[in-house]
Amino acid sequence: MRTVSKTGFANRRLRQGYTTGTCATAAATAAAQMLTSGAPVGSIEVTLPGRVKATFGLVEPHIAAGEASCGVTKDAGDDPDTTDGMIIFAKVEWSEQAGVTITAGEGIGIVTKPGLAIAVGEYAINPVPRSMIQNNVGAIIPSDRGVTVTIYAPEGAERAKKTFNARLGIVGGISILGTTGIVRPMSVASLKASLVPQIDIARAAGYTTVALVPGNMGERVARKKLKFPEDAVIQMSNFVGDMLTCCVKRGIQRVVLVGHIGKIIKVAGGYFDTHSGETDDPVEIMKRLMRQHTRDVAPMMYMLKVNTAEEAAQGLSKMGYARILDKFAEEATNQARACVDNKIDIGTAITVLSGDIVATDTAAKKIVREAKW
Image (cartoon, rainbow, N blue to C red):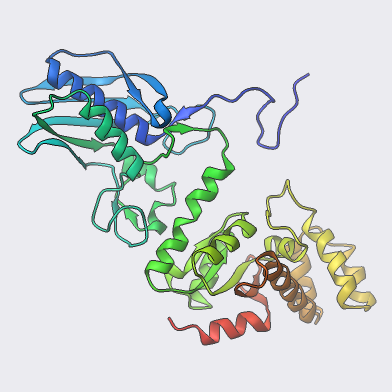
């Protein structure tokens, strides 16, 4: 009998896929091959980092005077990648400049904020894919000739709406990414890595005080009610501990955790991965913490009736027990500080679904009051 993992997949070997960087490399290499030989090709082998070889079929190969182009369909394997199934194209044309010059076109994003691996104003083709294209294409063209490689993706602008690109300051399309050339299915490490550049952008903008938020609700509250600048609000998803640690390493000095009671109460309970499969039920955590902060019977009896943290937070506020919610915020702060050995100042603000802030500890108020935006 097969069992099912927390990710929803049956316990079997998950199929790996290839990054946008690998697909762009394959398309560029095949186009270079057609340009130099003058003949169409049906597939191409490329070398990935670590000398791994991979072969790809081609889409829409085309040869014209002085140029050639083709596409490669992105196959993310069993990973739920936003770019899975889209076609990454490359056009290669002879150039008067020696070597391989790389640029981009339709559907490839342009960097607009400092702090990333690519300079402002350049196309979002990361260093490793650039190196892959240089090496593979350079091995095909004559040593005394030069080519210009243009990477493009007609679906890129639409697909990019489902990525973090907009908040990273990458506009107009997808990024050409990858460090190994291979997509490893359901990679939590990859998701974490996609969040970290937000911290680099905040530092590049001069911010040492940031808000860490689980999602869009926390972001709205941080910006509209606590007045954090856009680049000082950082999405952390469920990875509270990892993002706090990255803040320390990158020189952030003050952090305010801003999020819904259902997430923040998990931090107060000592959980730094707040995924539902990794923690106790939020209401149960609230009950445990409440016993430490009140002996009143009314709120304890009320907690026996509620089903969600949202219901509990709103009910406690209406009953006049908002101070208990403040204690939850303080406990989240204490746990977060302990997580990073008190190396940065941390405060906490708790919200409900309406966007109202129902609890803010003293530390968060002080950080926001003293922030120099």
